[in-house]
Image (cartoon, rainbow, N blue to C red; front, side, top):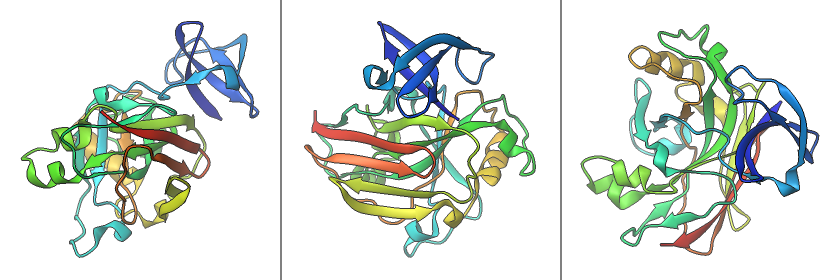
Length: 251
């Protein structure tokens, strides 16, 4: 099943995909009590937005063997925050801040929480998940390297790209993912290469922090991300979810 969040008739709505061309409207967000309505929309006429409006975004650093380089692997998941204000959805432009000098894409599998979660274990962690989506953890590398905190490197406006759908019933431990810039593949990987898998991440975070429905966890990026510039088109594809596509422009 794939859930979508979209705009139609001046309203932001939730729906579930039926086939490749139709989205059926839901009465509420998929992580809340909801019903399917009799209202259907052509997908071509609906403007997709980020499939959730997270209260918080927790991203995991250095979580793929192929991304470590010469760095030592972290013994536990290493979370950091991205602010909700940086979120955009499919088709929206990634905006390069005026002062930015080195901005890169990061293709990631993102987890969308479906149930309030505190004190999860590896054994039951997957039961708190609604589904999975594509994410682009856009990052300004010089700010990331030189600032005391990663607040602007990771949370500048438009640096949290999520979408296009939330897909359920996937195995987060074995999904292919890739990034393309202008059609050229720049990252490829599989979530079986994660240093800390999804259940481990949820267990670690929820020991001290309550995860709420609609919250997003970005699980890390494989390989070596590349620079993006104004005029580029960046795509992130996650097996079973779809393709998240965004253009890039200067502020």
